[in-house]
Length: 372
Image (cartoon, rainbow, N blue to C red; front, side, top):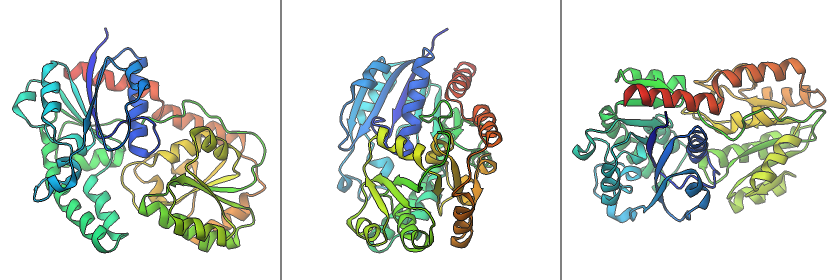
């Protein structure tokens, strides 16, 4: 029996070029392939309408995010208040079918009376106030003030998700956090581009770090790699990602690091497959880092710190490094080592058990059918 579902996305989920929209797009694609009839509502701030979304969905609605100045003085977080749009509420209430709100961002109308009869789910992409608290610690000046203010408002607003019939944590750690406050919480693992393992045989030639380089945390990690890892690394270092700053580009060039700005999906996949090892580092143990899943599916050796694998079952698949010295030791140890058949089989077993899109789409469909 086919089901219908409304999805409210905080952004246009294609191109799937950063963490949050990657989960949304591949969830959308997997549900559509499973026969779910989807009405997609998505906010935009410069991202364009996409024909692929129309191909996957019964109907696609686009809403412009509000001007930040209109959110001044609002007690709600900016990421929520900027997605206030009466047309969204009207369109949601026109269809008597379940609603999946993607992220706290999209929950402005979650508790509205007009939606009281709907089966409502919220996909939490992380513990949002903790994420913004972490951004504040890594920022200065007005950015720091903004992130601190937003963290406080997000913590207060988080109680609104109690109006949902079902809360879906992206990691087991997040599920356990929300279960402290609500009973209706389940774990729905992340959706991602890699449905099978695609690593190449033999040795690679370089160490790769990749991510959205416009995010302060990723830029800081990239700068640290240029300053502390690259000068001592026995193999070349490559950094790839979205919108690197001119400061990072100059630093990379000065330290002999190859930087690949804004690679296409095909370019990034090629870079990932041809690397000898991936270095994945984060200071925030919130949510799940989708680039970790991608690296495990397409790359050879993966070096990661504890925060990168926190809340997941994936630490066993990585080489844990929590300092510059540990990182350099591992780079020297693995630079001429093939990824073993045993290591590949362990990856396949764990990833197929928890991170198979088709399996998780069926799990979500079952939850909807049981609740609605």
